[in-house]
Image (cartoon, rainbow, N blue to C red; front, top):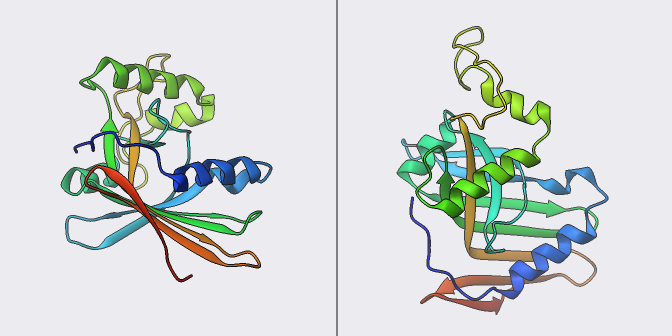
Length: 193
């Protein structure tokens, strides 16, 4: 999975951060849907938990188990799409992103530090699931690992680097803006809602 070159931030990403602040009193503001494509070409969608922004302040962070199906799917096609709706402000963000998996043996010191930092921010209950048997196997199969303080090999951070952001506002005056990276620059256009 490859990363894009850094580009100047876009206004849509700033609007996403404002929406996060305005909706933070609702516990569900941290959940969004993330879609990938299976090796057979079928869409696969699931709800994930937003864990903040990467140090570059542009990529969205999600955690996952390295043994999960989404890792296989992203290894074949690093493109993912996020659908995120905020009830308080009545805004929808659809974000097409390139996913980078930060797992055991990450190549850069920055990624190693990020993985450890995200792990340390998790609750004990969230950490425990990375020691369970492999996800997706029939119930009762697989082997659980002993829980330790060390970051388990199965713990992976996904960095979702936006390349297209479609922002739809559904309040009294409905608006829609599409932002995308073209020639390593963000270009934005207003479109019909």
